[in-house]
Image (cartoon, rainbow, N blue to C red; front, top):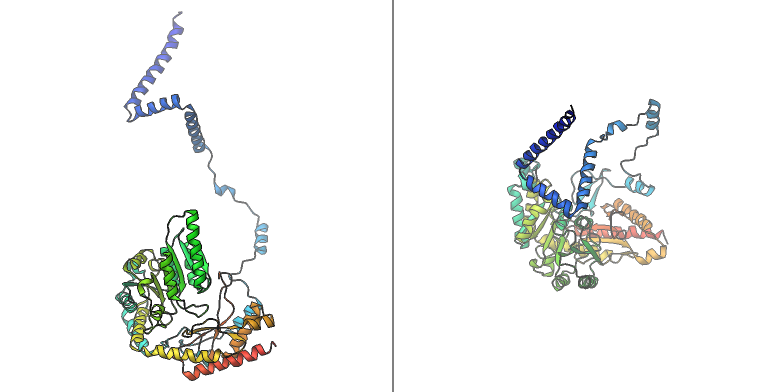
Length: 510
C-alpha cells in the first residue's frame, strides 16, 4: 500500500519525459533546428539583454494580435433628425471661384468679345471690325488660304485628334516630318514636338534639372518658365533682367560658395528667353554664351516668341546674333505664334531629344498634337522659307510704329529692341511720381487708354498677370503686337490713336 503514491507520481513524470523526448526528436528533424537552438544558446550566454528585448517584442506582437480590433463603423456619431436639419441649415458652401472686386468686375464687363475666326482684322460682337494688335500673329499667317486648304485636307484624312500619347499610339507620320523639318530649319541634329506651347518649356526644364541641381534664371522670365523651375525643385538663383553683369556676379558667387562649402558637382543651367514676353527686349546672346563657357553652365533658351521673327531666315536670335546653334544646349520654341498653329518644340542633339521621349512629362503623358495642327505648322514653316520678304515687312512695320510711339510724352517703351514686334507701353516714371500713381491707379489709366483705342478701331489689351503667382511682377503695361499683315497706314493710325488716347487720359490727371 505504501508504493501506490509513488506509482501515481512516477506515471505523470514518465509521461512528461517521454513527451519532451518525442518533441525533442521531432524538433531535431526540422530543417535548421540546430542553427536556431545554437542561436538561442549563444544569445542567452553572450547577450541576455537582447533575449529580453526579443521576448518583449514577441509578447507585444501576441498582445496586439489578440487584442480587440478598432472598428471605425462603431464610432459614428448618432444625430437626431432635428440636429441634422440644423446642420444642413447652417452649412454654407464655399464658392467655386473667389468673388470679384469692383475693379475686377468693371474690367470684366468691359472686355471686348470677338466672334468668328481670329485674324488680322477681328470681328467683334457689337458688329465692328477692329485691326487686331493684341495677337501674336507676327507673320500674318492667321487666315492664310493655303493653311486653310491644308487643314481641311488633313482633317478629312486623319480626323480630329490622335487620341493617345506619342509613345503609345499617338505618333503619326506628319509628326515625324514636322520634327525633321524643324531640325533641318534650325540646323540641329534632332527635334521633338509637344502638343501644348505652355507645357513645352515647363516640361523640358524638369526633364533635366532635378533636386540639388542649380538653375540661374532671368527675373523677367515668363510664367511657363517659372512653373518649370518650380516643378524641377532645383536650387535657383535669379539675375536682373537681361543684365549680363549681374548674371556674371551671380555665377561668381555660386562658384565661390561651391568652393567654400565643398558642394558636389551637379548639373547647372542658365534659363532665359530669346524675346522677352514681359518686356519685349532681346537677350544679349553673345555675352550669355561667353559666360556659359567661362563658368561651365548649360543654356536653356526659350525662343517661343523669337522663333520665326529674328534672323535673316527667321531662325531666331541665334541667327540674329550669328551664334552657332551648337552653343545652345536646349532650344525651345512655340508653334502657336509665328506659325499660327499650336504646340511647341525642343531642338538640340540627338541624345538630348531622345532623353525627353521618356522623361518629358508633357510628351509622355499628354495626347500628341492633332495631325491638322502638325500639318499647319509644317505649311507655315514652308511659307516662311518661301516668302522671306514677310520678315522685312514686319520689321518696317515695327520701325514705323516705334518712330511715332517713341515721341508720345508721358509713356515709356522701356528697353524694347528696335526689331521686336512686341512693345510694352508703360506710364513714364516721371509721370507716375508726379501724379503719385499706385500700380492699381496705373492699371486703371492704362485700361482707359485701351478703351479709347478700341473705340478708334484698334484691338489692343493690357498685359495680364497672376499677381499671387508671379515671382517678379512686371509694372503695368499695354502690350502691342505688330504683324506683317498690317498695312503701313494701319500701323501709323494705331500709333497716332494711342498718342491721342494717352493725351486724353493722362491729361485729365494734371
